[in-house]
Image (tube, rainbow, N blue to C red; front, top):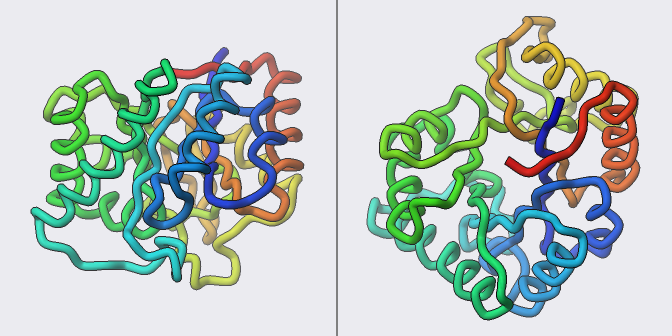
Length: 245
């Protein structure tokens, strides 16, 4: 069995190189919520070195809040936000003789779009206008997946090892004390449950069905490297191997 393991990187943390051996896809910050052209180029070099698929991780232009504060934009503004960031990654990849594999929205942008059909449609359209072969990563069973599929984009249904879920299958708000899973054993158990059984246990005990093409680890988590190593090794022990979509 194979599963894509992705991680958010290029966000200014010092653990990117340590994470690379345990992932198959990387979501690189595009300079708006975090990073700059130097971190983008450095992270692309790491991806090439470790044979990790390169993804763009566009977010709101809000470094102060790390792109995790909701921002209301017009349709044109949202389209331009996505198009500009993804195009930067596409062009930088070309300059460095590689290609962009996927796009995964970041933070508040990701969560807003997951439950907003119109936003998801605009994001998908911007990606397709740049390159229709790019894969769009989005929350399992969300509008990010359905709207991308509706216009012919390949998608990857995403689940999270280090986040808790609502009974509706959405990610718990980061404002809640239990939103982030900090216990390594719990993260491993949740990851194995999602990949092996296509279910996740919500914070209230509800069993939620999920599609699983890719599983995310957050690079800004203080235990990111330990989680990545443990989950990767736990998967290997269950004959589940990391492989890009």
